[in-house]
Amino acid sequence: MVLTMSALALLGLFLILLLRFKSLGVGAALVAVLFGFYLARTGAADSVDQIMTALSDAIRDFAN
Image 1 (cartoon, rainbow, N blue to C red):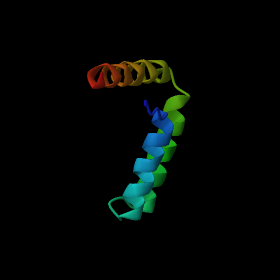
Image 2 (cartoon, rainbow, N blue to C red; image 1 turned 135 degrees about the horizontal axis):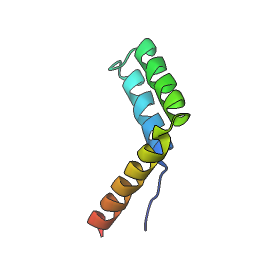
Image 3 (cartoon, rainbow, N blue to C red; image 1 turned 135 degrees about the vertical axis):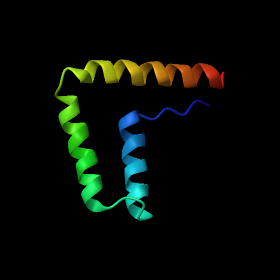
């Protein structure tokens, strides 16, 4: 059985866990969310998407 999860959901869960265990303050979480939002609107979004796709493919290939 293969379990797939989007990077957005995984990063969102990680951010929620950091907030829950007080490893990250609310202000820092807001900065992280805003940074991600504005990064997605720049020219770097395509490069970040390609890197994340390559990493997920490498992890999937490593697991097989």
